[in-house]
Image (cartoon, rainbow, N blue to C red; front, side):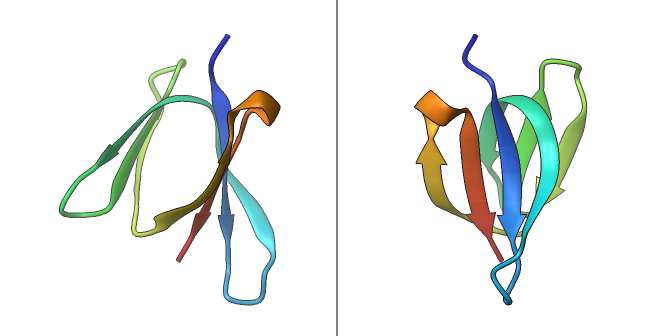
Length: 62
């Protein structure tokens, strides 16, 4: 499987789980559009800080 959990790092450096099993990330004018294998969707105003796909982790920052 090629899904990853997406986390958001806040200004204090704390990680918060945003969405599990994400298989699609699309940049839009509003932010990053995330969609997981369960058809859950979110748009987040953030940028990608790190992608560790072997570990199934994507880290975003505000």
